[in-house]
Image (tube, rainbow, N blue to C red; front, side, top):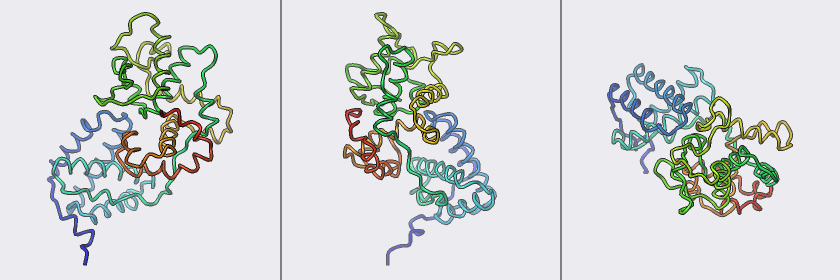
Length: 312
């Protein structure tokens, strides 16, 4: 007879003080490149986990222990399904960190999911919407060129808002056609590099670029010259999306993330495997890549096949 799944996960004991230290290191250093709100949420989730362990007094990192914790979040803490799902996502990633630290031989938390919220596939742009939002006017302003460069960077280079905020001019290599993110070389498509060069050319003209300057600069009066904030990125892209001329209910579904999801759909249409999509988009979870393969046919029906040149 095959072994029961529970038997794979033998009891493990981690002292509470050691676990607390691991949580501190994980949230301080392992998540240092995440958005501040994400770090704050993960910290809160893991403190909740630590509090549960202190009260439970019998947590041995077995599958049944994690199932008991999931029930606790839902039925004792009365958290919403969405919050339970978020807390469990944080726990899965933290336990994977514990595996890397040799505290756990395996990650049983991978098998625990919220399970109570419907799986909703991400929203993507149609061909017409994408062409409209990326279109430049005959006489573009510096703001226009910056926004278009940011949209291309999210769409085909899969940069996050946090990475756009932190990027500096020196991170871009025109010769290698790439941008360095956290010391990792991220290839840039022809269109993304062309849009970025147009923005930098108008911004600096014939003057030599200041390499230590932010790549995407804020143009508001209060923060002019500083890196555009994450809120600034969202606000400026939201303003462009508002001009699309789509119904109000459709506008409420669109955001900066829609560019990234659209890029994922383009990879699926281009025939990329789930592993290759994970690599290109720098995803940590296979399920995140599989959702774009699920959307492939729907994306084709919305005309996105005509936009494959954007990821070349």
